[in-house]
Image (cartoon, rainbow, N blue to C red; front, side, top):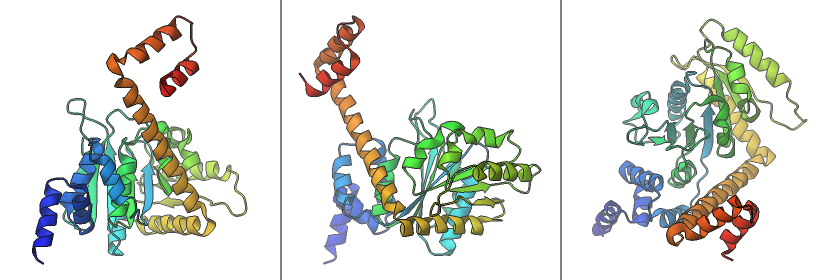
Length: 327
């Protein structure tokens, strides 16, 4: 009877998907890290891994943190991890970093700021490189979240790369979107308002002990008051925090939990997760089509269609139809 776990561990070390998933569910951090690496590398094992976790999607609440660079998203993330761990919640963190121009890997800046949680077996922190993907996220983020939820995490925090106005992709990925602002960064509302203010479910003004914080709070309240809300709609709360000291983090966690409860009571949670699944399926399908187009013999079919479009003999929509249909 004692040989079965050993065999399972041996299979996990060899990269067997079912064994890796089983080991990760048992708390093996190395197996979980291996699974995320296989996802990031678009390994041929990715499909069997997704099949292995499909029936165990879990009930993890996904919180996306976004906002302009320098507002303290990493510090807020670390403070939230500490708060939720105090309440015995198992927490996973995906910190999306810019890609190194030399290696293509994550620069690891966010992970450095969360080292206090590195030895906690109930916390998993992973830096993921954008690898040129726009929108503040890494391309593999949806699949990584699916794995973390399947192996039993209660809360998943996704910290976007911090690109300001372009970080709206997180809205299609998270159950709750937390927008973080801070004083002393110029017109932080102007930096955030193009898209980000519309997607926020909870707002935090971090570093609120600094001069100018009251102006930021006032401006955000004014802009949020201009939004139209129906009788049953969620009205985004605004919380002041000093994440470096932990001030206001309890109120922030309470606001996130209130939004989770509202999502469940209103039925919006299933709507969001269904929309997330649609986006994930669409992205995978588009990626597969692009890969297949590039794998055509010598790409001759694609080149031929491109020449006909350039010559005005064919419109791009008809060319796309021919490529997809193979006609």
